[in-house]
Amino acid sequence: MYICVYSLFVQMVIYVVTILLAIIVVLVILALRRNSKEHERRLTTMISNLPGFIYRCRYDKEWTMKYISDRCIDITGHYPDEFLNNRIVSYNDVILEEHRDEIYAMWDRVVNEKSYFEHNYRITTKSGEVKWVYERGLPIFGKSGAVEFLEGYIEDITALRMATNTLSQKMNDLEQEIEKRIETERVLLKAKQKAEESDRLKMAFLANMSHEIRTPMNGILGFIDLLQDPDINDGNRSEYLDLVKTSGHRLLTTINDIIEISKIESGEIVLRPEKVNTEDIMNFYYDFFVVQTRQKGLELIMTDYLRGEESDISTDRNKLDSILTNLIRNSIKFTSKGSIELGNYRSGGKITFFIKDTGRGLPKEKIEDVFKRFVQAETNINRSYEGSGIGLSIVKAYVEAQDGEVWVDSEPGKGSTFYFSLPVNQEAVAM
Image (cartoon, rainbow, N blue to C red; front, side, top):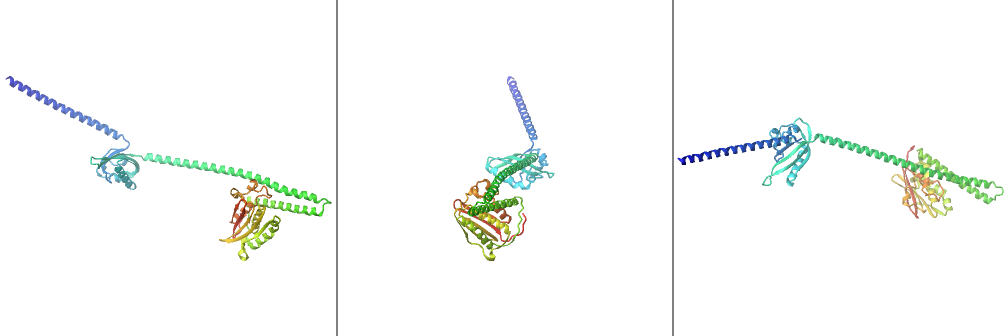
């Protein structure tokens, strides 16, 4: 009897323990389920609070979605279930066609390099609106090393893009405005410096003109007083008359230069072309200057020059006379020994004159200045020689007014060759 009671008691204990274990298992399972739901709830809440949506998709050209969060509707206008397994639309369909190939190429490189994807591109929403989105994602590899999924995050950045573009445009506009102001200030500064330089050079020019006018005038007046002496002999009288004549010519040349440069400065150059025989011109200037060059111990040479009908051109005779006179006088002035050579030739519808001397020549840094107005009066190019120093600027103005060119080849100690070319046929032009 005791054995039966003990056996019954053991069976009851085993039964109770079994029931308790079952209850514990059920409680544990219920607890785990509650924790899982809480975790899932928290995760869902967190995902829903993101400004964009997360996704998991296959690595194919349709980006077949296996999971996509609810915020996709706010960005694309499509519900998540429309994308899942491409039920109604694939994600590739909403990507603008012009971006599709580049996105796939970028993902292909990311997979090969096992790095991450990051890119901005445009999509079309269900309503047809175009938006800019930012995507960042990673490939998920399986144990075999093959890509199982792509996971990432997509966010609407249209407003940010527009704001950035607006800011960029405003920055560009601001930069352009700053550049314009800097350029304006640069132009104004350059104009101010040019005006100051012009004023300085003109003051030097006026001082030089004052000297060039007073010197021969004083000579004329002084020798006229000497000529009034009744006791002067014929030899002195002849010498004084020659000096008066020389001073008169110098004064006349200076006055002519002043008149010419004033016309140039005021833009009153008028061209009156006519038929001119340059052979006659060359012979005239040879005869005109040969005595002056011989008196200075120089040789005046006529080399190659055009003859006959070939030497006929249509040009302003007075301007050509002024150009040649100034150039020949300039060469004589700066040549103390040797020769002056004159010539011309035709080429390409133009006639080119040259005046070559064996004078002192010009350093390279001075060559650009010799044709500038007023510069010679200030740079001591002419200070050891008489003259206004504006003859070459007159030459340049008259040559360029006739669509010609003027230039010089020079070497210190070996002399200079001045060239100028004029069109063979010219029309009347008022400058």
